[in-house]
Length: 395
Figure 1 (cartoon, rainbow, N blue to C red):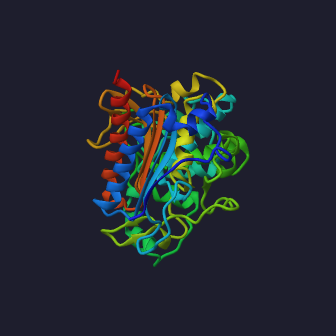
Figure 2: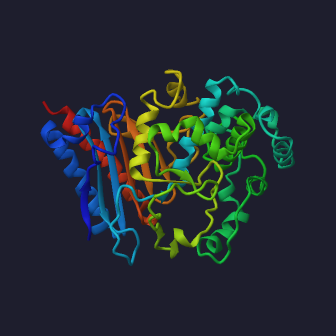
Figure 3: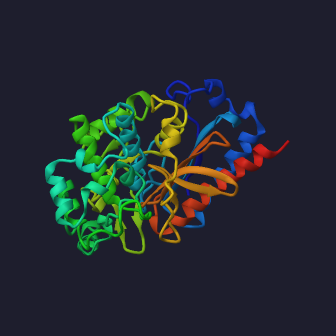
């Protein structure tokens, strides 16, 4: 088993806003708390590989109060390989794409180009409106806010019979098909509306397909280009984050790590291109970039107005989960409780969690390369946060 802690090199990694470079890289001299938090995270990541048999796992922590920015890794990049996993190794982030898309929508809102409570019919092409109308939806009653908060009553495209029948063949490479946004939107019309818009919460990738379409019409650019520019990937130093297929792979980036579903025998490398290219998924990133993005969201590095992040994490009154295991959702991030702490987070289907904890001023990401033990990554994510809270509470 390969296991090591990775510290960013001071010559190439910028400190988060408001954190001195010395604080980020002189962890051993700064505080015993940082050392203890590092050791806890090391143990958790190692257990995901050793005890839970993931090929590889990693965590990244940005915790200025502890004088700490560090990545912990264990294992290798593929099941039968020897290449060590690193914090710069990209993975498919699946639904963690959604907070990026939401942030881009909020930037468009800041610019006055969309009204959250306006009908989405005002911001979609006539072709997209026709698809929704043909599927039984009253477009006039669905707002941008409904899409952001999963309260629009839209069928989830990835839970339709048509898609679930295709999924095994897509994941094993028997079928290679690059869906268009319109194809997926038409697929999502199966069965008609789930409920009246605003009546309830039910997670739906389809809403983020529509947000991607709104981004394109509002900006006159592709969804990928609009998100990159509005969020400020280059400015934030997210050099290992991009839209798979829709953008050119960044120069010099490492090859993606393999991500597996052992139970079904799936390898993410067999599915080419990925099925979730538009808004609900489709991005590739690293544990380091993900933690930095979430940290930036809450430190006035993405939005122009300080109040935007507060509206983004607010929860609509109707956004009570219909399913027991669903998290409460804001307008882009999930609202995740860890003990008494509130965590603004998001998870991804392939096996990852990333979030920010205001009480600790800490961003954390945890990824694993075996999705059928997905709950174990969330448990490790929570355990890192609880350890930080425990250490902070010590006199």
